[in-house]
Length: 377
Ligand SMILES: Cc1cc2nc3c(=O)[nH]c(=O)nc-3n(C[C@H](O)[C@H](O)[C@H](O)COP(=O)(O)OP(=O)(O)OC[C@H]3O[C@@H](n4cnc5c(N)ncnc54)[C@H](O)[C@@H]3O)c2cc1C
Image (cartoon, rainbow, N blue to C red):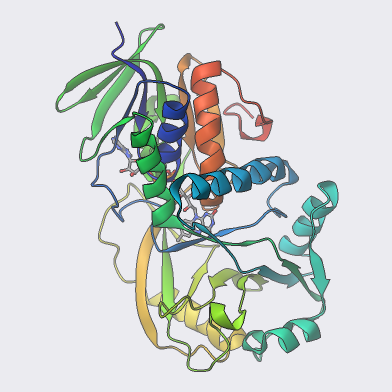
């Protein structure tokens, strides 16, 4: 006899949202996480995450993003806390690259409001982006998505957890799941405290998902990534100056960043690259080569930032071979929903992924099209 309607393994970005949506639909929910509440050992920390709709990765994500925006707004209303900060997002890259054609395709297919900008307009509006290497390569294009911005990542997770508890969920931290199995009807989840019986299971283990799904042969690669905060040496980089978030396809990779928010410093990181690791371990060692790449990017493209590093943090991407998420029921265990392999671009979706996880677990299907994200694609 199941003592829970659903158990959620992992209470990070996805699992916190799944616990909230399951509890809001009246389920008796147990959420389990191996680490303390608010930990910085996985993938959902580092102050900010970009959120945008004209998705260069694939137009199929756009309906999910529209719903994600609605759900972030609902979460803000329910909690009285600002989570989404609209700053606009400037995207730069070659006309025949990946980012600009992808943005234009998604915007055209879904009638999204984006504005094409010349390089002159970009440097006139934001002189902080007028680095010496900006015009090195011909054919550079720019767009601004005004309805893009950033989410406060830790606040989003904590708000989902609080609303889950308010709706009746039981959440246990520092409670690692050692093992889970199904008997065709229900699910057994083993922790050091004993066995929990549930009708449904949601697996949202982030960079530890490979271990939780080891018998299923889902190929997930864990990459160590870094985020850096620099103290600008020139004015014009602050959010209060109107400096936007940015995403830049350059000959040496994809770089992105955020305005200087308050006194945090300008945050910058490289989306491409990363170091493959066997399993997530902490603390993250310093990576001088990565820091050099970041400072080389700043010197070339954001000339007034300088190299006064304020702080840095490591984090993990969990990538699938095609870098699309996994959002599905397990083919051989329909009681088990898996949301994994967010491939370094999933936080903005966590509000809707929580809703989709609850639909998979309760209804066995989702209201939005997730065929791109099926396990057997
Ligand atoms: C540097 C960096 C920058 C990023 N930038 C962006 C961005 O700008 N925009 C964007 O949309 N996305 C971005 N992402 C991606 C996004 O942050 C991740 O896709 C998302 O946070 C992943 O959430 P998750 O729930 O899968 O993993 P996590 O938040 O790590 O949660 C997994 C949880 O599962 C728990 N767990 C695992 N195994 C067990 C077990 N056996 N028992 C109990 N608990 C367990 C872990 O302790 C952890 O709390 C970025 C990621 C990184 C690393």
